[in-house]
Length: 430
Image 1 (cartoon, rainbow, N blue to C red):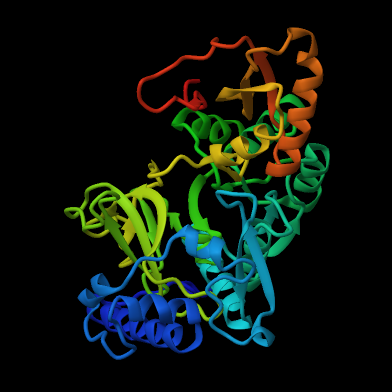
Image 2: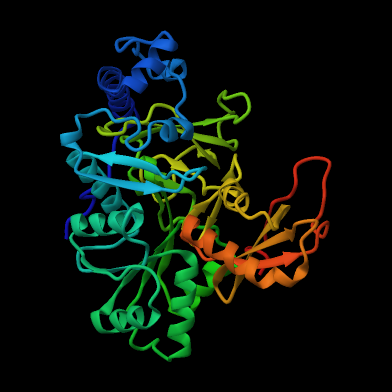
């Protein structure tokens, strides 16, 4: 069977030439077709013909999440609307979601980057890929399915949850690769073990992402499912969606598609490049995105570029796992949540105090989010149950994620002279 059907194997000089051509095209395309980008570039004194080397990328202005919010509902649009064939969205820092537009070429590129992930994970068209991530506005389900179909594998598009159906299809169809969050993989593993389905399970690989995970958690589902391997995947809606990078079997970082994006690692405070191999904020520039190109987009993800060649032998650049955020975003069950979103909800409840704390835990492989909320100073405790229900319902509607509630007395939460510790993440303390 043919190999390397989708993976780029470009010598350094060829890749650099391709990146420069893509960078020139992106700046020219954005300048000519996006009023927002044109204004930003003109303010920086940059014209469409001012890029002559890859180092010139440092002269370009940054794009931020605020640019996406201010351009709602179709931010950074750089093609006529009739060329837009779909949109996807992710959560934003306020009530409005970040919406990204796609041309048909963008959709095709999205499928390509995911097909590359399946190939780097060692799959073949004979594999059967079960997709257990969210569908709809989110990019996850659509991206995994696009890539699986482009790759040529049998696709089982179940979506998240519904363990009974997941297990039945996994056994009956003979699923060999599961695409899910790490939490979902662990739940599936525990159910397989609990129901004695190991003999019926043909699963050999898991591709997982969208949330933090601990090595202990990963080892647990690998052992329970008897896997040949599992692979951490990276991606975000702004960069088409999932599939911008994936681990190989060497597990020496994630290979990313440098022919589709330029990744800079910058100090989040000075916005200057960090020394090679050091951690900083990932800033990405797209090289062929049509509908919503990215020019030095600040992802807020913290990682590092890994120098040298991977022991797998592939001449494909690598970055480390996503090590955290330079802002305060929480990833909970695959949904991006900001404390500011919670504050926006709480301000509509006069019975609620000003102080709250978010506590993230993992129990039996499943993430839980507990919101500890102080009662207002002059509010009696007798209404705690009703307040919990009302706030919980409002948060569920806002965040599309279920939040557990605990009402506490005024002054019960810790105070600080600096920033309040709004988020306590104990998910890795297993």
